Image (cartoon, rainbow, N blue to C red; front, side):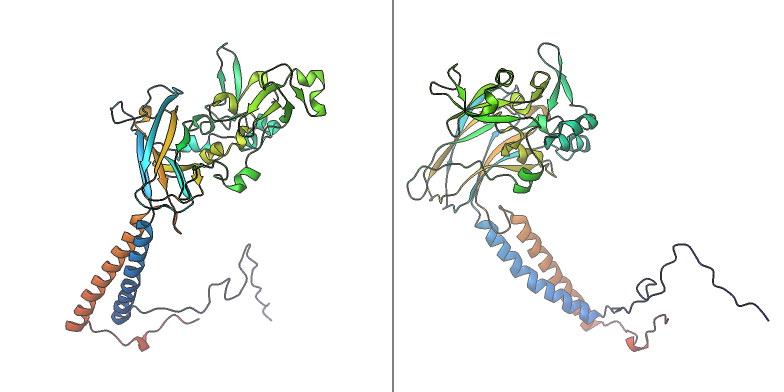
Length: 389
C-alpha cells in the first residue's frame, strides 16, 4: 500500500486564505467610450467653477512686499550689505491699498538659499537642541563640519547649538516703527506664537544645568547692588559664575548660568542681536528657522498683527540688516500679507483647476464627436471571461 504523500512545509509560506493568496473578489472596469466621455465632462464641469472660486479666494488675500536686498549693490537696494553682521539700518513704508483683516502676517522671504541640501539638512544635533549634553558627546560628529571653531584667542571652543542650520540663523532684526489699526490705535507686531507649539514643547530646551532667576536691581541691571531673589544665588561659588542680564520685554533683571560657559559658545553669544541668554534655543525666531524649507525660495514667519488695518494706512518697518545674501546670489524680501483658508496668496492653484477642467471638457467634446461620427466597433462585454479560480 503506497504511503500517503505529505505536503512539504515551506518556510514563510503565506496562509491559505483569499486575502493572503490574493483571491479577493475584484471589480474589473471596462473603459467604454461613453463612460470615459461622461467622466471627462463631469470632471470639467466640477473643476472649472472650483478653480474660479479658488482664484477669488486668492485674489481676496492682500499681499504687499518689498525686496530690500537683491544681493547686488544697486541703488534700489535700500538695505543691501556686503559684510555679515553689518548692522545697517533702513526702513520701508507700506501703503495699504485694501482693508486688511487680521491676522496680518509679516514674513521674510529668502531666494536661492538651499535649506534642503542634504549636508545642510543633516548638520544638526537634536539631542543637543533638547538640552541633553551627555548624549551630545556621543553625537559629536552629527554637526560636522560645524561642530567647533577657534575664538579670537585661537582657543578651540564648542558650539551649542552646533551645525550649519543653527549657525546660519537669519539675524536681520525687523521691527514695526509706526502704523495704526482701524480703531486709530498704534499697531503692535507680535513675535510670540509664530513657532509650532509641538516644536517648543518637545524639540527644544535649554541645556542641562541652565538656570535663570530674577534679580533685585533697583539701580539698573549692570550695577553691584543687585541681589538674587532665590536661594541658589546666595552661594558664592554659584554667584561668581553667573552674569547679569536686562530682559527688555518685561523690564526685569536676571541672573543666569550656562554650564561649561568658558569652553562653549552658546546661541546668545553667536547672535546677541537676536537671541537673549534667557531665551536661548527657545527663541521662536530660531525655532522657525530650524524647520527647514523644501524649496530654495521660501518664506518664514517673523511676526503678526491681530488688528484690522484700513485702506490707505501707512505701515513703516525698521530693518537692521545683518544676514548677507550676495555671496550666494540670493535676495531678501519683507512681505506683509493676510491669509485665507488655504494660507497665503496662491493664484496658481485656481489656475491649475481651471486648466484641467478646460482640458477635460475639450477632450470630452473631441471624443464625443469622434464616437458619434465614427464609432469604434466594440465586442460584447458580456462575453469577457476572466481567469477562474
